[in-house]
Image (cartoon, rainbow, N blue to C red; front, side, top):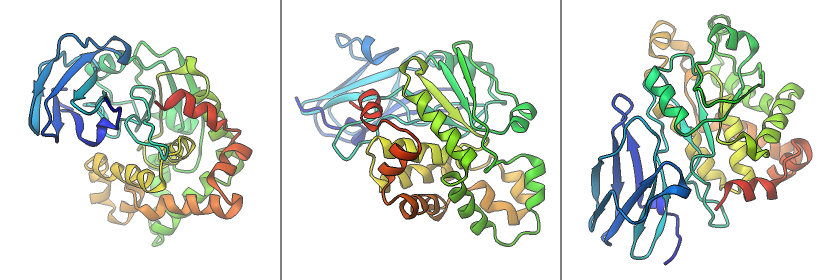
Length: 320
């Protein structure tokens, strides 16, 4: 049986309000779906669900816990889980798992997560994150942001890493300071360039990769305020280190537009000119990527020589 990227034909979707789970699948082969609380403990003797056609199927599972699934067809098999985590008190919570690298390997599910701020998490959100279980948090916000909106953390968290990146600060004071500017798009592109040029940004991304290369920190969640700028660049750099194609990285970056819809609607309604601050456009991230290529010739050179990334180690830890 081939171990293709099963994530191309199947997706797990969780509803944020109820955490109900659904399988969406596109295949005409007979298939079986198995589940477990970790990829290693999936019970392959008793399928949760089986079928022989495409469709969307409700999954009768424990909604309070994160679950990993193994999907098996006649020709393919693989681990799947939800890409977008069902947080009532959050918007942009995502698992980096499931993406396919240039060498046809897949990012493991349940190892690296990204998100927006954590201060509005509800009790069932925290229980859910603890069931993963999230072990370490890397907070990319400034000290002021973290103090103003402290994280609500699941009891599973054993390590907290404050990595203060000033660029990308969306505190009310910083937003107010932008009012009256008519070059918001240019400012967002400059911000992404600063992520890969300013010494404090480089140092914090260097530390983040050091944390990622220590398996005792996993599963790890890193976040900023919206989960799109500082966390967006962090995600792009992580994905580049794992050999994910640039087009896929841009597509993943653009998902923040979908998941953040509604989070900042009241601010945008009051200050329409600030809309670029609360969304993503391909040119924002591309500005940072192009700056890396201009300064370092290749992304890999930047990762290895400037951020001290052991690319082989990253791919050994996170790809399968």
